[in-house]
Length: 228
Image (cartoon, rainbow, N blue to C red):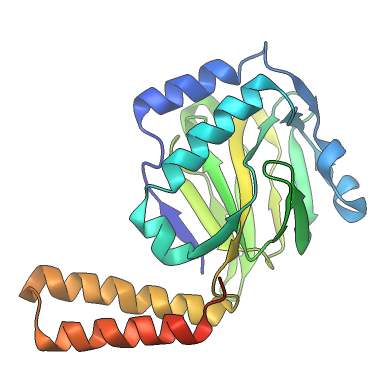
C-alpha cells in the first residue's frame, strides 16, 4: 500500500526543521549508511546521526508522526527506526534503483527494526527544486512522488525505488522505516480499509449496532494478526 499523508509537520515545525538542516548542519557522505548494493547507487548527503541537529530533528519528526491517526491506522507501528535526514543537490543529487535492507539497526534507541514500511517526509517545497522525484515500483507500475513540504509518503519496504537526479536547488527530506505489529502487507491493507470505512459509516450514521459489530471484527482480526 502506497499512501500520501498530509500535513505531518505544520509550518512552524517546518521552519524549525529547515533551520536545523541548513548549510551549517553536519552533512556527510550518504553512502556511510548504505549497504553494499545501495552504495553503488547512492549519491547524496546525509545528516550525521550523532549530531545535536539530528537529535532535535528526530524528536520533532517522531512526535509529529505519532500524533497522526492515519499514520497509525496504516502502519500499526511496533518499532520506528530513528528518522534520518538527507539532501540532494549539486553533484550529490541522486539515488539509483535499490531495495532497502530487510532488517536495519536503529541507533536511537539501540534496536533492530524490520523494514516492513518505508517512509519519506518531504521538507523542501517542490517549487524550490527540479527533479528529485521518488519513483516507487509497485504492482500497478511506477509511481512518481513529489509532495508538498510537511507531507509524507509510506510504501512497502519490499519495493524497488529510486530518487531522480535533482537538477536545480536542493531536495531535503527525512526517511525512516516501520516494523509493523502486522507483518503481512495484505493484512495491513485489509485492516486499513476496514478502519477507514468504519470511520466513514460513523460520520454518516453515528454509532449503530452494525458499526459496533464491525468494530469487533476489526479488533478480532488485529488480535489474530498482530505481534506486540
